[in-house]
Image (cartoon, rainbow, N blue to C red; front, side, top):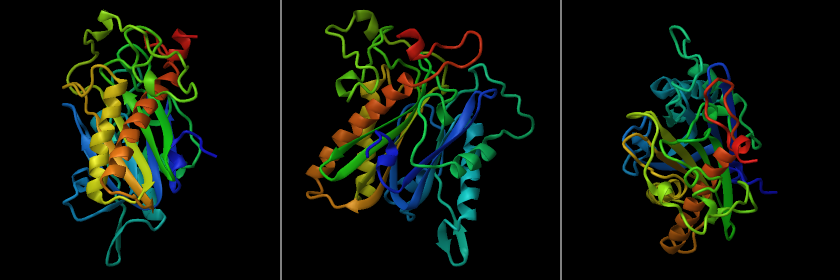
Amino acid sequence: MPQNLITDVAGIRVGHADDVKLASGVTAVVFDRPVIASGDIRGGGPGTRETDLLDPAMTVEKIDAIVLAGGSAFGLDAASGTQAWLREQGRGFAMREALVPIVPSAILFDLLNGGDKKWGRYPPYRELGYTAAFAADTEFSLGSVGAGLGALTLNLKGGMGSASDKLGDITIAALTAVNPAGSVTVGDSGQFWAAPFEQNNEFGGRGFPHHVPAEALVPRTRGSSATNTTLSIVATDAILTKAQARFLAVMAQDGIARAIYPVHTPLDGDSVFTVSTGVHRLGNPVFDLMRLGAIAANVVARSVARGVYEASALPFAGTQPAYKDKFR
């Protein structure tokens, strides 16, 4: 039974680990078997690890997990924790007797959200990365959890969202940590920019305004350079080459643009990863990839809105309201 989650693609598990006092966390997406992967990075402030190997020209084609984390550059430690857990399971790229788990990752900035970031000599993200991988399952929570715990938007609490859809027998789904400089709603209303793509009232069913007010189109952002980011993982069970996965990531980025305004700014480090579990063959490699990319953008847009819709406010004075608290 589909759950409208990225785990509707068989062979994928998701785990969260977070700390409310820290107001930050980690989300690990673990694959039962290594998967073809690529990605696309936009905006002026990305923070990533092991993303160079996602280029179709690079030798290693498959990866074992992807990690999303808060903590800005400190959060890049989280991938080491997930890598340690995978190594304990005997997973990794084999070079003779050596196994090296391949774990690309990306981070978002949540260092100024009111949480206690005085963690001492070493940040906690490596242990959170291990715990998130250990907890990975086919069922998981949305909203203020994992890498989405400390996420914010321009005017509302950000969070972790997910959505899925079908193209014939092929499943395509997304998981997104929503922490943009811009807004996910149309101005200060309760209507989402992603509303035209909503399914089954998954983020409230308020629809799109008949007329977009002029003030909603005035670009407003929060933060300063490199303090925001939206991170998304798109997964499909279609059989894709690494080059096709790369093109899917390019098309899927449009989903972030459909759901956030403004987007891909110098303040953001928007990143989309794409993975293929390789079950169903494309009937037409060009036209079916085009259709798959269009749906990928839709599920990314829906996952962005769901991340904000399901979020809960942080328990600190002066923090941003949650969507459901503001729009009951």
